[in-house]
Length: 177
Image (tube, rainbow, N blue to C red; front, top):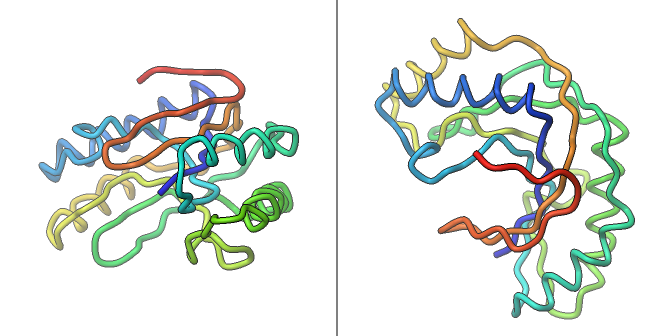
């Protein structure tokens, strides 16, 4: 599997990372920190037979990628294990998802993950993952106390492989955790 991901400006990263860190501290679930998962927004997930082919597809997407601001007004959950910040699915994100999907669906052996096919994609920025029931309640207490709606600037896009996370290529501003 390959991921196409948007990354944020330093201010947004810091705000979201502080929430991720506090969820880990309060809940004892350090999955996000242990796996070096930085704040990000996955735009697409897809299967492709070779890394070279995935990179070739990502190169075709580059001219369709542009950097803009998004609103992150809320939080949500994918029960029973994930809590996330919820960006507004505005015209920018909708078009971005559509443009990426248009390129990927024309890949010969490419299979786009069903959760990332427009219009059904749910934009989300994971704050806690693999949370147990009690950990989820603790995470809710953290976001209730710390989360505030924010404007975020998308500053770069990357292609990666998960498990373990391997960054293959990035367009835009690069960053390190």
